Every structure is written in structure tokens, then in C-alpha cells.
Image 1 (spheres, helix red, strand yellow):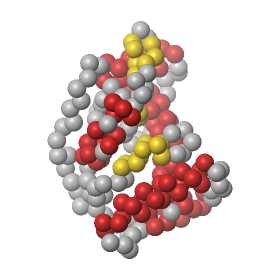
Image 2 (tube, one colour; image 1 turned 90 degrees about the vertical axis):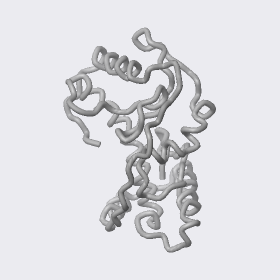
Image 3 (cartoon, rainbow, N blue to C red; image 1 turned 45 degrees about the vertical axis):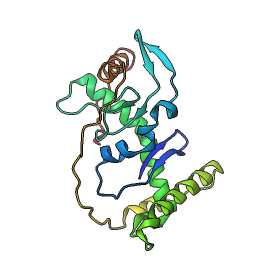
Length: 198
């Protein structure tokens, strides 16, 4: 399952098409979010350090760097890049929490689902819809649910390799955007030194 989450733990986009062994970038490439990004991602910009910066999503290192999808720096990092990654990681915590709450509430997602495999996407999607409903209703959530969900044995998935590089045709250079955001954070906020590993 690939999901886009807002600041209220709500799933705003979900893709449940491919098996768990599929590489994240392949799932992304096959998702409606990628294929319809021009209509799903609002085309609004803000001037940051003299650069028109579009609205963007935050992804982990498995995703491609796009004008509307920023991911952390990888490899050997300098202090500003590490700090940028810390800021991104802090923003992504809500996503991790949303997935934790989803699995904590709907325990069928933490084990083998005993239905015909063709129905699994509908079960997962139904859980995401119910998750949004209970979050919107401000239903209580017990942290012990997430803890017990973590204790369930996960079954290993076969490994898949990334099938192809994702190419995004746009006039905006995503590396330039990310570097500009890094510099803006470096110039306006204290450098963060605690890096949350992805």
C-alpha cells in the first residue's frame, strides 16, 4: 500500500495495486498519483530564497526526486544536508504515525488476510477509508494497539528490483529546488544534528 497522509493522519491518496514484494518506486510509478499528478497536485508556488517553489509531497529515499516530490539526501552528507534530512524526517513522522494507527486499529493488516488474493486490495482500501472516518470523528486511539501490532511476526516478502528509472518531464529542476530549500533552512533555522535514519 502506498499512501499520502495529511497533517491530521488522514489518507488523501491510496494505491493498493501491487504485491508487497514490489519496489516502492515501481508502486509509485504505477499509481494514479504519479500518472495524474498534474491534476492531483495543486499548481501553487511560493517564493523561497528567490526561487518559485511549488507545493510538494515528502517521500523517503526509495522515491524519485521530482518537482512535486522531495526526498532526503543520501550518501555522504554535509551538515546542511543532514539538517535538511532531519527536518524532512520530522515532517514524515505524521505519515509513520498514520500507518501505525491504521495497523493498530485494523489488525487484519498485520497478518495474512484470509480472503481470495483478488479481494485483498479492497480489504486494505476499506481499512484506509474506515481509518479516515474514525480519525475525522476523533475516536479514541490507544497507543497499546500500535505496540501490540508491532509485536506480530511479519512474513518476509520476495525481493523485487526497481524495474526502470522514473523520468518526469517538467521545466523545474528538483535538485535545484531541494538545494534551495536546504539553504533556506540552513540560513533561517539552527542546524539539526540528530539524524533520523530512514
